[in-house]
Image (cartoon, rainbow, N blue to C red):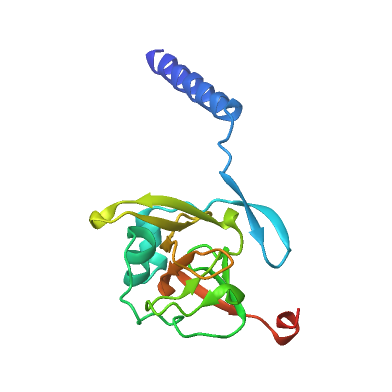
Length: 181
């Protein structure tokens, strides 16, 4: 008899937990509005959120250090410093459109430099006072990857220089038909 009461209590508690689970709202993934070059307009996408261990599994140690720990690659070592092909630079971590080759320029700094992003919605700017310097950090709006910094010494039309780590990007070349537009 005692076992039966105990079993009924367990079943009742189990049913109550299941009922609560079914009636509780499921937390929706955080969404972010960004600009898509391919769609030529704004789209809403899910934010990419991963644990440190998940990022370590998919990124090289250098990619992890730069994008997840706000590191910096040494000047002149990045694969995109002297790349001059038409195309699109996307976030290495989440594939978000970030910069276009039409906005790239030679800054002489040793990092790929752009006078503007694809769209302001695709990046986040954060005050950075590390190492006794006052700078503005540039992060991906979708996955929060550290990309580099922006400075107010760039060329017209913006006067800005987005100094970006190559290791935080991957390049998607434009086909000839697209680059004619």
